[in-house]
View 1 (cartoon, rainbow, N blue to C red):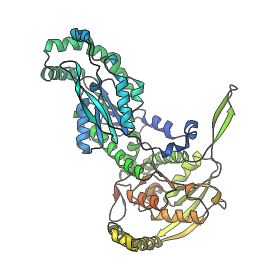
View 2 (tube, one colour):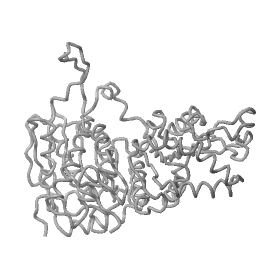
View 3 (cartoon, helix red, strand yellow):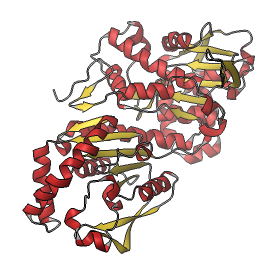
Length: 503
């Protein structure tokens, strides 16, 4: 078997270390919202930032190879590569005369300020001109630059990209390529003699005098900041495939979040993707399915609570000091769509002591509903039907195939913020009927937050278009619905798997 996901918080993918990711993500998303974010309520409406990946490792460890393989597999123009080597400082005439005494592996050899400025411009959506460095003459090409356009994913590669905390803080994911020292030395000799016109003796002298000490002093200590460690570099195809899948997920989520500002996906980490891998596996035991589902549900619930309104509150600490924080929203309730939504109730109760939870049961009339939905799905691409009003009529018709069987809600629900619970958003029709009921009960649309584990793009389009003021919070956006309107790749009938009533 190529990879193993251990049932622990420090999972490994074929030597792909994922240490500490859950702790980082939990601290970022587990509390409803920090005081600083409460003080800036418009932060949720800010443009989505590019996803920045840092790739570090020793000289000739295979960093560039890993980056190239990732980009080639993606086949996507929204990913750009920025090399730290492009930001070497040009040598002065005095330094050029004693070039063999110059340490190119020391942090001072790089123009970190310009690197920060360039990546900052890319993150702000602006194109930048990256310098081109001449390694034979040890200076920048003064008359030429490389144009790098703003993209959804930025890969920043270099031996010391993890050394400066200001550069590290720009990154959403940090990858360290870990390759044996002898292999790296052999590759460096080959590269410097063939590509840079140097003799073997000078390469070995520089390696012993500067490269190895700098690796021990600066590069290796920065390994501790990595989220993912890839042994063997470009030879580790399993690790690279997992990273490519992760980036593809980010790109897909990124697009829908751009289209719908009321759509939120919790920050994806390899720990979260590892838990998704487990609960989607049809061979997983019921106990493990429930355990990892509960962990994911808790993250979604806590992220959803972060979108509730808060008021400033001051308290006196045990030291006698004044702490300015926030006070939670008091008028809150949950509403679960029976029966899968009931799986999310315990996580909500664990986060909100004594919260009231209502129930909505919606039933669909079997295969006839599927057939009409399939017909409607195929007609969706014909714009003249939308203009004629036939599409709208069919959409209302299919919604009537969903029958409201039962509802029990708090009497004062119109005065509350509502967390609507359903682990899977597929077509969006059941959710739409539940939301319509809440609106009929007097709940303002902007007071509804719909929480789920996975969402299909079709369901997102359906709900977000009909209810633009409502918020959706999910942990992952899947690919699509199949002809039977099941989410693909999905996780099957969630309620049956969670409550143990599947075959």
